[in-house]
Image (cartoon, rainbow, N blue to C red):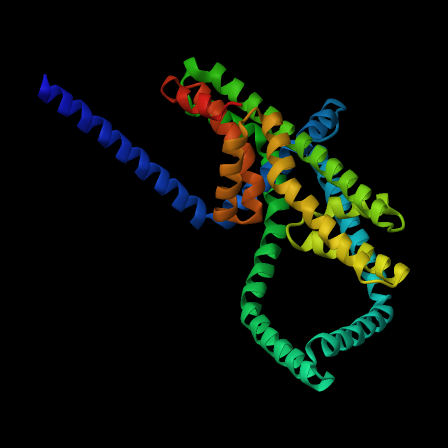
Length: 351
């Protein structure tokens, strides 16, 4: 009896070790293959969005190549139009550079006076301190330039490969589904059909939740800008909301215009500071409360797991992982619910 107990314990330990090895290997593969998996992840997301339009055009009797090309290039045109809007606002911002320089000079003069009155520092002294700071900042930026170049090259790779992968997934979708059916035995084909259907529903729920998040963020931005007194708060609020889809860069570029407009309109630095604080609060709410809660509700995944996957996705794939890892959790829940031995995972992930 004792020997049997020891044997059972050793068997469980062995199973646990195998599971841990599998998890470590999976994480390693996901990290090493980051460029490929990120491209495929966004491509699959785009293909899911475009699939109903492709089917609708097919029912109209349009040639298969056109049923893919029409919605695909319409989406590309929409992205280009969005980029044009951003570029227009950047150019509008650059036209205000002279006013910004005058404001900065005025702010610097006020800072000089404040430092002289409070700390007794002469203009020459804190000019020297400021110069040392800018020199050290320049050297730091030079050290970071290599990382910036590699980041830009990675972005170019994604911009090129994601549309190509999305187009090819739509083109060969029937063959991909047929290959999956041939991979599984006949008895499990009904389960496979349910998994494919539920996966598509999951991605649609994720997209619907994401759109809802941007609407909420747009409303919060607009309310804050209206309270601060920025002209056209609704326009600026929703522009900033839309461009938060571009990680890090989008929010910084899009927020510069309302900040500049407020600074020029009211001739006070406290208005731009108030806008920056409000946008920071909204971003924190979106990242750590609104996003996990709404997407968790849409995908029927509990918030604890959502937080863990957002952090894990950020560690492995950066900002892209924080987006792509979320529907993967729901997909894992679907697969686990179809397997008796993995039912506990489905229960763990469920809301």
